[in-house]
Length: 319
Ligand code: UDP
Ligand code: MG
Image 1 (tube, helix red, strand yellow):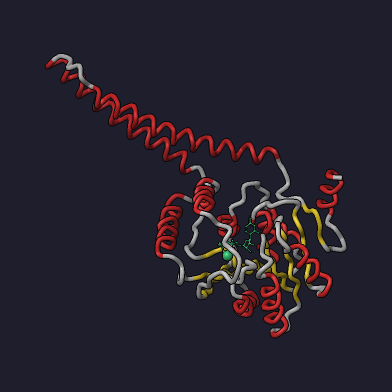
Image 2 (tube, rainbow, N blue to C red):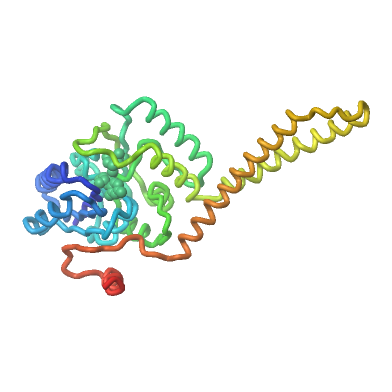
């Protein structure tokens, strides 16, 4: 069986289209399947549409969060509720073309544990694709796992890969990195980039920036290293400068107006210190969140007949 996992956040405008397109593809290829919708605290009609679909079609399962927990949590929920031998994660805005499914399944049947759909960046603004490709160059230099440009969450995972992903219980999840971290036999297939069908992208400039920082920080401690290196570099420069000043003072005496050098030293060092402090703080923040051991999401509603043990527990705590 194949499980389609579709996180949705305020997707009332495309949900029907998505459901119909996916259903058509799955029926045409005579797959046995389920669609697991995860409603990530939408404030529009998403949930009622899901309820309706669930009543009409027993292959439609939905999980509804008590608030917006973010796409990472939604994907995690979908993965842990899914029952298929293979799982396909897709956006509901039809930017991940369902027509790719047969090729992905074929690659899975040929023995791949992760089939990654990679998009080209056609139709995207120049500046955005430029920033993205720069980011990936940078991140691959900094991070232990290799990330590829244009590769998103659209992928098929075998049951083995899903179980491995679920065994990583960290609170700060950066899926792109996690997918790469678990390894297994991978295959990449390309598709044409599609613009969003309806509704708006949930990414603002700042959320992208934050996502980028997450990507660098959540995978290793190289930024801490960098802070140490820049500290050492500045210190060496300092030592030479002080020596030079000392010799100069001994030979020519003190010249009082040192305002420029003074202020530049203060500013430069201050800047480096603030950055280093920020980096350290970022890690401590993460440790703080990890130690709380909070669940990744809270399920308020679903149409599963047997509610999983952990969900029951959470519900008991909440009531
Ligand atoms: N999404 C979600 N929770 C969020 C934000 C987004 O579940 O907090 C879902 C959204 O419904 C969509 C997918 O994640 O199915 C991708 O979101 P979006 O299209 O906004 O991102 P983009 O395609 O612009 O990267
Ligand atoms: Mg999208």
